[in-house]
Length: 553
Image (tube, rainbow, N blue to C red):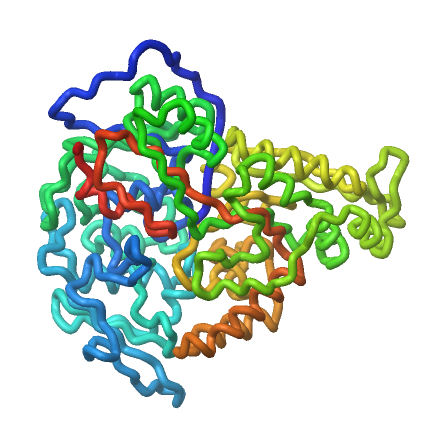
């Protein structure tokens, strides 16, 4: 799963006069996104900006394509039980696991000419399973009991259980052992600060995709050029410049002035902004609105004493006018969310209970929880502690800040104070959320089709200093029933039998209100009419994974 958007004021460029001329041949493509990556290491931290940029420069073993089918990227053929690439194996503890064998693409090389081999897969496993490496999804790597090089280009993974997603290695990122292994083995706990991905980000040996990073201007831009060692289709553009423009309003000004060619659909315009732009600029751009597995929500830090009371959590939900927000801001195109599962997903449960806007019910719940209105209207408990919380999101994103202010007003009407404190995305995601230094936090998760939420909901995935802040369960959910359902989901290979488990998991999530669902988002793709090849996916594996097919019409 991935996170969403950012902001901080930048100078607006004047927009006047005719549209910029398009001259052939065009060698540079300038893309704008709203975040700058906190790190370029593919396994450390989960941030949408990093995923988008690395989609141009690296290839995972597998991915989901635009049709939501699992396909090979760095492998030759997707291993299955049917073709013999996967097989059940007995484990030492008497249980059953699965061995999955991948044959790496023989053309695959790192940008310095070093072949991509099984040694790189083994090194990634060593980093991922280390308890102090701080990778975002360490549990997935620790489930792998053994990684074996059958030969230089063949690698077998033995997993500790048989799951329905046994051959999905879309988040298994091979790492260049010839560059980073020594940095890791010398000091695993400080590897995140020593990795070449951040100390030498232009080292060509870090990249095996169609492009490689050649320049990094921290907080401002990342420049990529074709990877001479890439064995796939030759990319068209000689240079890709990815600029960070964190202020929503500045995106439009830069696009219309010609300072940028394209604003990334996954990390660019908000829906309301794109709808307004379409009314004025339909002659210059093609507009596509893609309902995606992107879920906007507010996390509650369950370590906050007041949030341990379900009545307080549910009062926050009932007093939030989410339907009004959707109606006023998005013309109804982004539906109110009931849980973390999107209606487009095959496992969505339509009968999950709704939580309608009901401020009177919220007041009753707060009364029952022992919070009485004070002289300033803000409720207090019997000890006089005010029901007041810090509320953060990514700074400068206009629509997020509008939603934030609306929620602040909703909650104040029932006696809850939300104190707004926003930060740039690289700080918000890189420090505040990762280390759970928040009380209320608004952001978005991006997921893959039928993605089991182990890293976001299972108690083993709560980030802490003890596990080097690994995991993405930022609220700190520790619920035995939820853990059991997640475990059961993974082990059930029959889709029909998984359905009722998925339905109960979504209902549990909605009932407990550990997280406040806001709405399911749609990605607005505003594509210049001269640019072709961009294929929106609607899930967390972005269109940038097919950058080699982008070109002028």
